[in-house]
Image 1: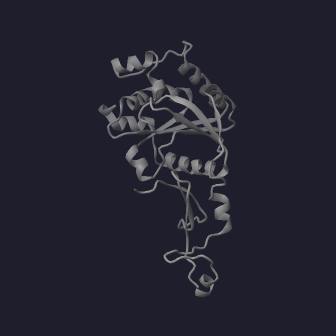
Image 2 (image 1 turned 180 degrees about the vertical axis):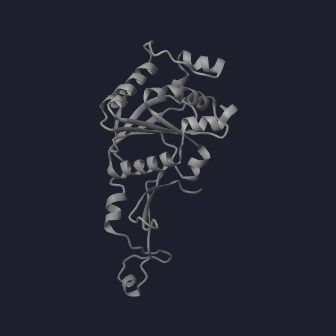
Image 3 (image 1 turned 90 degrees about the vertical axis):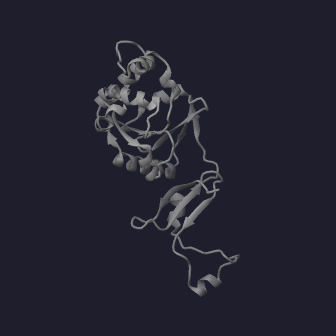
Length: 255
């Protein structure tokens, strides 16, 4: 069975060599780079077994991209503390949204209205969780802060994805910038199937769900290598994703 490898980073800006990968299941680290070939150099190596190859990597590569601990230290927060993050960030809040279903969307009148009509209308005068979030977005973007999101969509969108495509207009009217990407394109770019917010390019809020698609808790991560990895994911996803208006127009009747 093939390993599930995650690209951590590279010390090269040109050809991606040498680089560090990590096995997400075992925690093992895979490093590739130019081989050590000079016989006099190889002769000095101890415990080099038959079939093994010695490679040369800059020390900075391991410092920057090698995991510091086998078990990453994270701080788990509850959903109330998670909501507070949207009032306390300084510059940017960016989201990667990859799941096919979010159970929290299926609570309230909006979901039922969508099932009946295929559209979502919101009354912001009502004190609901959605309207509260919209007002928070408005307040933050009014200060010049950016809130951005990339959502993945399957070739045949799920009901939950179609709901979010309709509901996105209200996020956008609040000041959030939403783009979409087909899952096949995300797979081609090797984007991970992770759901996270990245705040101010320094704090990751990794969303954790149970088997019923309920958000249960959030892990906060500040490890520099993980933050840079998520920033690289953000840059790739944002570059290739399509603005919501264009994406939905191209979908047409498939909405």
